[in-house]
Image (cartoon, rainbow, N blue to C red; front, side, top):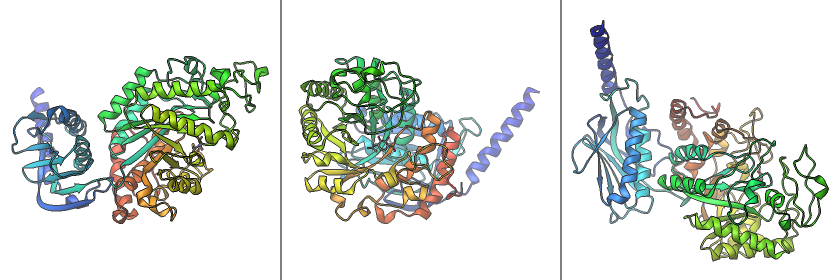
Length: 532
Ligand code: TNX
């Protein structure tokens, strides 16, 4: 009996190998890489990735080790092959070559595949990481079939030369309206890194919740972090949690951009510290843990808020304690943020008079500068005098973006009508909003940052970011459903030059990514525009 099972296994194994090696594979230029690389040329032949393939790192080991480890674990999860490393260049190896003198730009890479080797060359580790991302998408999607080390995977020979169009390729997660755990954020980082996204903007505070520990103002999290939209749950990151996210993101070549929204969208702070409150009215809602008689009284804490209205709260811009508060917050977060940006929000401050709003934003900008960061803010911040190093995030009003440009600032492109991942795909989408638009996959794909306004030119644009607001989004599966496949479309807009992009090609390539998401258990929207 045992013998029989063994021989059946061997036959099956043989069939598997046979089908692997006889399988016709597409030339490299017909592969399904997203974002589409800048240049792909075909060469006859193919590389066979198998259990004897080695990973060879050439260059500064300290900088290479992380990428080599990432390659090893990625190959394992795609193919069940447990590749070992080798010191010397040799045949049947994936070679990671870090070469600062290669003349390649910061995030650029070259990926060459022939019968003997796969070679990824870059001048910086980020470029190697992106080469690995492209390589992963070339490994056929039938890994683990035989769950054995004898599997062999063909990769078409050729050469990819690639670099990003925009330096900032971002995704934003609102963890304030609904809170998401460190594990959820790490899981998302894994997914977005595959599309060469390099910034993760965390919307860490809003009316409904304060999500990051501030040691000098502890009630922000114990009170302000205690709830969320709908009233259940809530939560916050300790500074240690935040550092863990920053480190994990960094290992995936992603820069964390922390946002503390101010002076509006601040009810969670006003509910924690009454002295920040100028005396405002919070919209009607259900049962509240605090005495409503305090409402609207200058200097008294407001009740916590679990609804979804926007634009009703403001910090007291005329009190010195407010500036002590924002300085403490900006300092503590900047100290644990290695990235260059601090996002001050600045949107929808409907109850802050414009003559109070402008000096507030200018002071916040000065404090951000004092702690060594550059200011990012939603497009309304362009009403204030911006530093040339500041960046306005264009989400709503082109005139604000243009005002920022006229002041010498750059813009980050996130038009709600194209890039908001909380917008429904169509009228039947069970979660999400419609206030900006319905955004089907082709709508998310068919636009270009330079085509929005004549006055917003290529040189004014830092990059592109797709935000996910979470008023209606409560679980990891719901995040995934709104993010995929649209983030892949936005990622291609941010990475691939405009003249190389086209919907027909994208809509075919994305189908392969659907198979990958399915295999990994990632939830996604099966757009009817794609032949999945
Ligand atoms: C507008 S976008 C907002 C957010 C909401 C979002 C919902 C922006 C800067 N402000 O506060 O969550 O709409 O789509």
